[in-house]
Length: 313
Image (cartoon, rainbow, N blue to C red; front, side):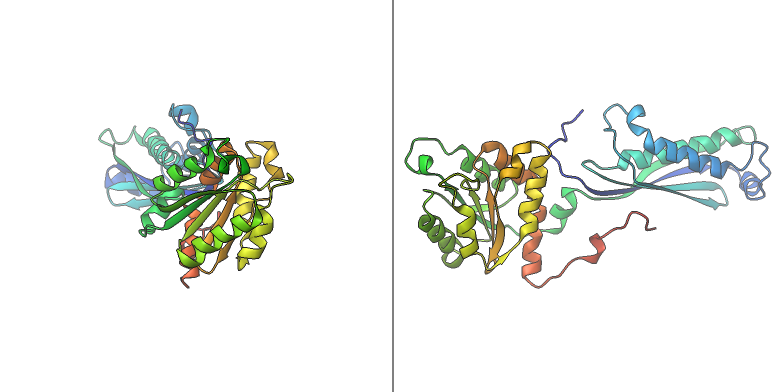
């Protein structure tokens, strides 16, 4: 199975359709409820729901996931039954296979209950109609390349005593997210050095994103959060909270981080811990979705079409 432990949970939605060809006379028999085994549609609906919930037991590489909602709709046309299945889950991976498996099993259930009447019946199509959720939605809607600066805050790294592994991890990860790195700098834990670099990046260089690593703990030289309170115009606590919550599920010590985030002008500033693992988790937790902040800063507002409710049809 693929490793999805680094992914964040989000609302995933998929809709699939299966098509069963049959004779017009049999369609009429279904409508008049003259099938000896009973009405096949309610039975097929239950079968589809069960199939969606058990897809991981049938398809080897599917991950077990918590299904939140399954809807099954039948459309009786003159020579066919179209079965549409929508599946929703809040999880790390999509639900396309769950929707397609459910639609397939519903069609097979109807076939099984009607085969005695029509030997020419055929399931002619099973296809995915739509899917939403995950990073692919964001990437397909955001085309701009944003600029970024990376600031490593460490006495030992600035003096050449330690290698800057965390800073280089951030640079590589941001480049993979299609951000253009315009500055990569190391400073000591001295508050004046940190503050001067952040203001230079935001006010003079006008970069879109500044990522810092280091100085977010409670050690005697951990000054990054205090500097942030002087630099940002508006704090965005939800960003730091999301990164901490993500890290907490993987490393209990993440609760000790005092990392902060906010905007100065139109520059987003995010603090990451100094550890390589902490910065990897920060990138996985926040990107690319955090870049939506620039749409908001530009007066774009929230896209209502991206908000879904589990019980909506």
